[in-house]
Length: 111
Image: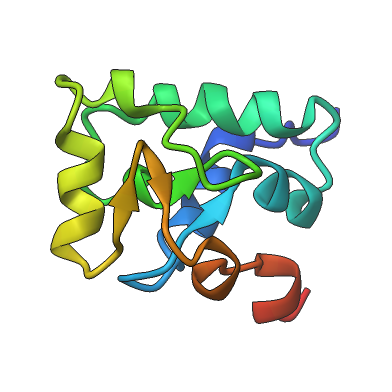
């Protein structure tokens, strides 16, 4: 029987590579990993890593830079505070200079 992929761990491996002060999107990770369920699968993985301090889930935002996963951080401003601690500016729950700060694993990592 073929070995089953651990999609969540593959997502976590990519998320661990996002540099401080940068963000990526659920969709960018999904495309890089060729996940069938796409961005939704990455969202499930991010939700599943609440007790994993080694996974900087706060660096994963939606396709327009919105902090769409902020409610999973135990408080309405924790995700924003974590990003701001890394120098990322947030206004109205959205990453300022999103396109400049976007880290795309398909461009940044060798496949």
